Amino acid sequence: MTRELATDAPFSQVLDLTELTTTDAETGRYAGVIDPTWTIGPKVHGGTMVAATAAAATRWLTEADDSLTEMAPIAASTDFLGAPDPGEVEYAVHIRKKGRQICLADVDLIQHGRTLVRTAFTFGYLDSAQTRWTGPDTDMQAEPSDQAFQYTPDSPMGKIVHVSQGAHMVIDPTWGEFLRGETGPPRLRLWIRPFDGDEADPRARAAFAMMAADISPPVPMNLGHFGWSPTVQMTTYLRRVPAPGWLRVIATAREVGERMFDEDHLVIDATGAVVAQSRQLALIPAAR
Image 1: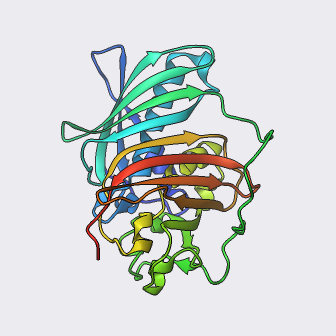
Image 2: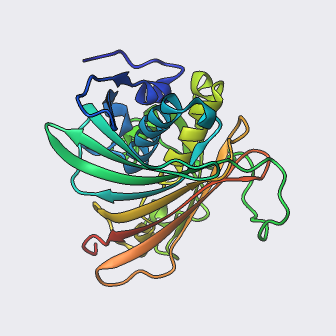
């Protein structure tokens, strides 16, 4: 199964699934393709896999019961059993609970007969655009400045973060000390925006926000720690469908230890609303 990368809606292709026949009436099975664009180095980007499995879970849940069509994957708890390669994958969806306010579903991402990623989803109703209270404002601009670091295909970051070829993506250099060969606190800020075709689709914008909640480079890079940082476990929240425009991503750590570190993502849309969040525990790479 192959397909050409759409220049204006590449992320939507990740969400485009084909239902497979199965003898188990309780389990939905879908086939999909994750293009090499959605990789970090040689392996598929974690946030992309969360968004893709969410699409599979949403489709099985809502097609099984059309009264649940307004529900969305508001929380995802993901364990990474292995690192999938780009290409063909399958999704096996099992509904654990159906309720009027909350539904639960488990999804396995399978490649070559092996379950490599397992996610437990909580479905509910997304929040409205109105908020009763929000935390302190950040001084991060709604859109990137001219000084923002560009992920060009021939840049050191662009050669590794292939996701930057499927979206507009830049780093705030004021928090990216590692870009200047310096060290600083374990925190990073980015801007990311889907291409026009993806941005025009609210479904794709919501899934893109979930993906963006895992888009920052590992924040220990500012401490001089470079290399692959395998995620042990990640929890992702989808709060609302983002407005069209740039997403602001703020990544911070509470503690960087000798073996592990935590990393939080806060994703804010063009209106200043929180649209997605995540927290993950990851293994720290060897020091530089």
